[in-house]
Figure: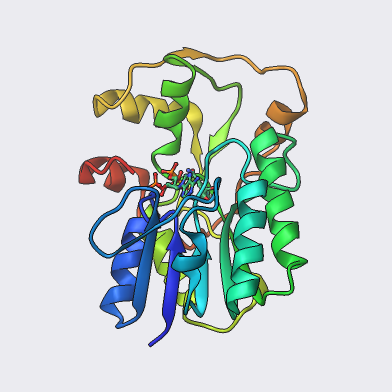
Length: 244
Ligand SMILES: NC(=O)c1ccc[n+]([C@@H]2O[C@H](COP(=O)([O-])OP(=O)(O)OC[C@H]3O[C@@H](n4cnc5c(N)ncnc54)[C@H](OP(=O)(O)O)[C@@H]3O)[C@@H](O)[C@H]2O)c1
């Protein structure tokens, strides 16, 4: 039995990961800013509750994100984890963060580097976009989506959680092989499926945007390639009714 702290325990992969680790008999602290049953209440931005959450933790799985700039929070976590004597830190990153000059991805790559330089034995797993991602982008862009040749390899959060559980209960492995979903779909195709399922009514703008970030996405730097290790298809996820 390992004592494991999961940051971002309420995130897409966080919830199934906590369930899987507990089912396997591990002692899991599910970290959130909101108190709850079985939770460790802490805030990575202020540091409140962090030392208490880490006391006795042997392994940390770091999934928390503010979806803008996580590096300061990651550095705060690393300092506290080092002080607490954490023996293994597992970090979930995103495929292509070192090749796509999108601000959030650059920040994610900087977090990877900070972890590798921290002195704490680590494992870094990069995953492709989750099934919920296209719908979240549409909502963020006020119902519009630019597709211009974009492809996506969506993966189920259950599949990501299964791999994270293996890694968290194994030895530190450094950067491991990326994981992606079982199919690479045209963005147009995904939108059609979302519309058919009544999940989104995007106004699709089929144009290529200028700039290096869009070019890096259309070049496919965010794809893990086939065969993907994830098993849940986009249609299976839609049929499940899950929001994440
Ligand atoms: N979305 C994708 O397509 C995708 C693809 C590959 C990898 N990832 C990575 O997977 C992870 C989870 O992504 P997600 O999209 O599922 O995230 P999400 O739904 O936005 O959840 C964010 C999580 O971070 C926690 N959090 C945010 N600010 C925090 C703070 N100041 N202190 C402590 N916890 C804080 C939240 O906990 P509370 O609100 O409960 O406090 C929540 O559990 C991230 O590391 C992300 O980069 C995402």
